[in-house]
Image (cartoon, rainbow, N blue to C red; front, top):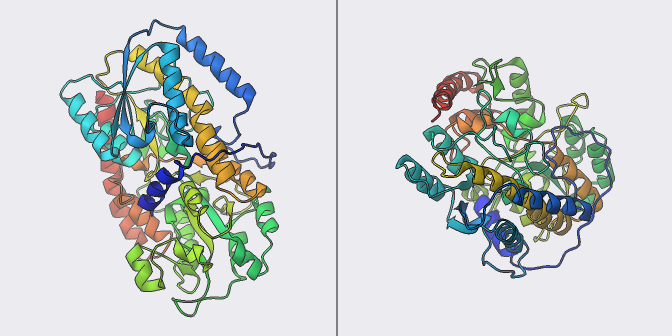
Length: 494
């Protein structure tokens, strides 16, 4: 599914459609944990960004200095000129402004993917080379390996990068620091920040068919009352499926880990010194949540759990995991915001909701950001001019708030990819409650798996918890060893 979405997106962004951005009204929901990505960029904000970047340009003499940015090809314009492609132009405008304002010699190194970036950077740095200034790559395919190899450096004490600015995800300092040291920069500087966040989609053809009021769903979300109970109550309007190749499912493609975070649980915790750890014993609350979720998600008369496209074809008579929802055979589809952009071009009409809370007493929604999609920015240990990289990273972050956020969030996602104003408002809730977890760094995951530790949790929170307690204990011990190795790497300075 991810490969399909990314391939589609590259084509979709070449359309050059002229879109109008609008700012939705405040939905009145206190989400907490905001990432400051949820409000459309206004002219006043753009003027402030321009003034701020101009001020940065006066901080040092950068004229004629070389700046090398390496990473996945999606972080670079398709051509070094304006083409009419919304995303490519936004990346070009950022690059153009950096060159014009700072007088730098911009050297992009565009690579096919995260694995390629990881290999290229790790080889360069371990050999003592200093050709790369700033690296952009996937959390799983690139960042995890670079951090564990000790080839990137901390960013929390940089002079110019201001983590309190809206173009940096503030929560990263709390969720990805190891004993006060942070190695990831994350925000609109990475376009994929707008594709990685989990949500729930509902099929509007089916809500009409089963007498479900769309406004009631939106009202529940906006009032903070979109909960597991509410979701199950709404879904009960759909009768259980009696044959796998016909009938309507209440739920399609549940994913356990995002439910865990949405319901207020966490995986990685931190001691008084800021060192990460995981509980080695299964908490009662996690066990209860597992029982609750499996009770309806493992019921094949309610839920279509799709392991793969091949599994979907054999079991449900459809060619891919999303087709049940597209073909009006699934009421709720558990997706991420990248899926939203893909599905908008299909024939299905849908609305967007945050992942449900455990109950109404839970203070905030919590929207887990998927490490399969998520990317971040890193600084190699051997960088030759740290002050320049520090300055340019802050300028890139600010200009990304102006250009990348406008292209991806304000125009492509909020305006092009949704059907109604209510979904614009719920989208703000979703992006205002984005959360991350460090487990991506120690669970031995890659592009195709959560990793051993998260895989067992994911399975136990969606389809089968029969061996959850024993699997958790065994995998938690492995995770603990991986965390200890990570801490040693950080303490040694790489």
